[in-house]
Image 1 (spheres, rainbow, N blue to C red):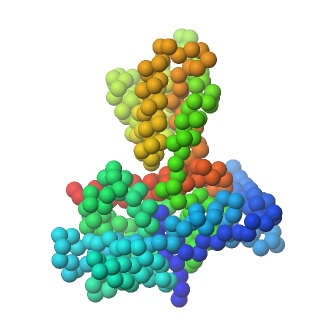
Image 2: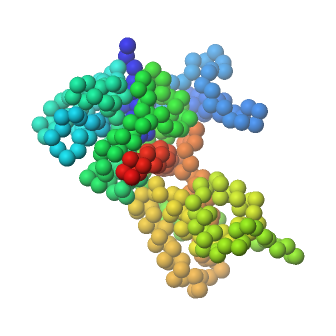
Image 3: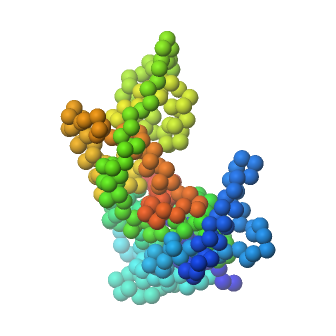
Length: 372
């Protein structure tokens, strides 16, 4: 029986990307579809794909948001496997490029001879490769390498440890790893990949995203990012907190370990935490720690702005106040958050990169445990 298998890292398929025709009705139908299935029900958002009317449900991406060039990266497959009779220092191997043949079978090039070899992904393997073979897109693998080693060079990673880490999440009878790829990807993982409107960001190439110039322009022109924090009138209040007994630097380090949403909740619950995390010193570093998925060029823009702001803070005029890095974080977090129905082409690929990075961090934990 024919079926699709999915990338072990991002959860997206290797084929079956359907893109609608650029007719006048397509964008409007998509808007209505996304609005309908995202409508809050009893205070929560539902993404139920069951049709709510007699109209045929849409099963293609919006051509205004996705083109064949955008999804070309999904068709090429590599894999990570383990050989019993390997003569090298590592039994693990990375394949060359290939394609998904169908019914769980990969056709990839392996070895110096680059001969075409067939593997069954996520299955029980063969005599030569007895364990499961992990298929992936190469750009997803580069994100995983950055998460593990800080570089995109496969030579810097222990492939055997990585194989064991990924195998620990393997679903032997499934078509992907047991990982949280995100609700929009999980819904699309049927017998075949479903091209669901509203989830176009999941198939945008995460390696082609570059918001460096947008960051430069936004930091220079967006007045909202230069608005000072709202003053808090303490009057006779003396904010006390168990953290107040600790040095401020230590509290900053503790807060920097929290996810953004958790930190937001903590600052709302604790006046003390709210007060000591209002300075740019903290938020400049929180952006670096909470947003490691930013590309080097994008992060460099923020680092350069840090230097520029610190060197010119004393001479800044009232009309050009220093950047409020808490607002910069809040803006970046909002525009890059993976979300059903997002239609900002500039940030869709960044949102996909951010989603994939979250999966890679789970694999990184298992990898470091294997290395230890």
